[in-house]
Amino acid sequence: MKTIRIGSGAGYSGDRIEPAVELAEKGGIRYLVFECLAERTIAIAQQAKMRDPGAGYDALLAARMEACLPVCRRNSVKIITNMGAANPAAGAEKVGEIAKRMGIKGFKIAAVTGDDVLGIVRQGDYRIEETGEKSSALKDRMVSANAYLGAEPIVEALQNGADVVITGRVADPALFIAPAIHEFGWDMNDWDLLGQATVMGHLLECAGQVTGGYFADPGYKDVPDPARLGFPIAEVRADGSFVVTKVPEAGGMVTLATCKEQLLYEIHDPSSYITPDVVADFTGVRLTEVGKDRVQVTGGKGKPRTDMLKVSIGYVDSYIGEGQISYGGPGAVARGKLALEIVRERLRLTGVQFDEIRYDLIGVNSLHRDKISAGHDPYEVRVRVAGRTKTMAEAVRIGNEVETLYTNGPAGGAGAWKVAREVVAMVSTLVPRTLVKPSIHYEVIG
Image (cartoon, rainbow, N blue to C red; front, side):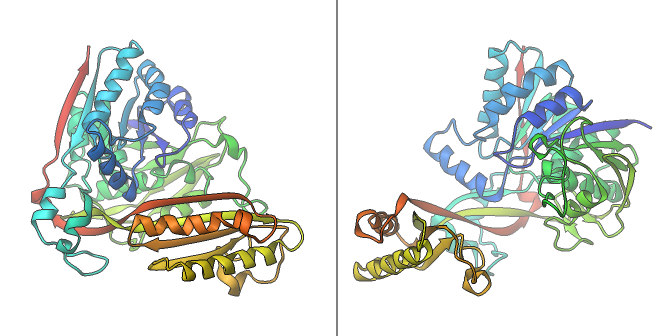
C-alpha cells in the first residue's frame, strides 16, 4: 500500500529551524509543513500590513526558506505553511526573491488568500461566542477578522503543481491533511478518512510536543537529548492509518505517552472536534507501539462538516504598562515587598488610572499567589508591577514608577526594565461558509 511521509517543520512562529532542515535532509519526507500562526499573531501581522503593504507575513519566513529551500529542492520535498499570516501574497513574493537569489529555478509558489473577512464581519452583526454580544460593538476597534479555511485550496494548489504553498489563516490540521487528500485522491466527503487524517494533523501540528518536548519533566518523564529534539514525521497510508516517528539519530522520543498527551491537547469534546473540513471523532482512536519511536494510530472517525466557519476577530482592547526591578541578598523578599508597597502608594498619590493591576514578586508569588506559594524566602526576587489601562499615557506611568525605585529606595534595586504596549485581544464568531471565498495566486520561478 502506498505510503507518504509528512514532516512537521514548526509548531509555532518562533520555533527552531534546524530540526526542519534535518527532516528535509534525513527524514525521507515528501512534504514539510510549517505551522506558525497563533490566533493573536495574525492580528499583529494585520497591524504590520496596515503600516506597510509589503509586510504582514511571518518574521522568520525568510530565515526558514533560506535554510530549507535548497535541501527541499534537492530532495523533492514540497513545503506547506501558514507563514503568509496577514499577507500570503507578499510572503510568496519573498520566497520567490529568495529562490532567485539562491539560484533555485523551475518551481511554483502558491499563495492562498480569502481568509481575511474583516469587511464581511464589519458589514454584518455576528454573535461573539465568548460574550454573546454583537460584533458591531467592536467595529471601531477591530484590526482583523480571519476565517479558518480548510484543506481544499491547498489541495487545489498541489494539484496545480505547486512546490510551495503559503496560506494565511487555515485550520492547523488542514495543513497536514491536504497533502494526504492530494496524494491518495480522497473524496472531500469521506468523513471517516478526513476524521482519521485530522487526528494525524492534530498530533503533528505542535511539532516537538509529540516527540517529547513539552512532555519532558526531569526525574519523572525523562527525554533523551532534548537540546537536539527531533520533529515528528507521519507515515500515512491510503486507508488513513499512520505511524508517528522521527529521524532515528535526532533527540527526543515518540512513545504511547508522548502521543497520548498531544492527542488530548486543546481538545474540548473528543467526539466532536470541529474543523472546516470535518467534525472529527477522536473517541475510537487506538495507539499501538510498533517499534522504537514508532506509534501507529488508527480509529479516527468523522461526521459532516458544518455550514459555518469560525472567525477570529482581533481588536484593540486596552494598553498594558509594566515595570520590573530585582533585589538580591539578605532581606531581598522584605525589600521587594516594600518596593511593591511604595509603587502601590505612588500610583495612588499621582492618580494613575487603571482597570486592572498586579503586584508580583517573581520567585515568591507571581504564579500561584500567596495562598499556595507561602513558606520560603529565596535569595533573590524580581518585582513586577503590570496594569491594564485605557490609554497609552497611563500605561507609561506604571513602568516609570517602578524605574524610580532605583534611587528612591528600597536599597539595592538593580536591573530595572519597563515597557508599555497596546493589547490586541481575540474573540470568535461564526460566519456562513458561503460568504468566504478562498482564491489562489501562483508565482512561477523559471
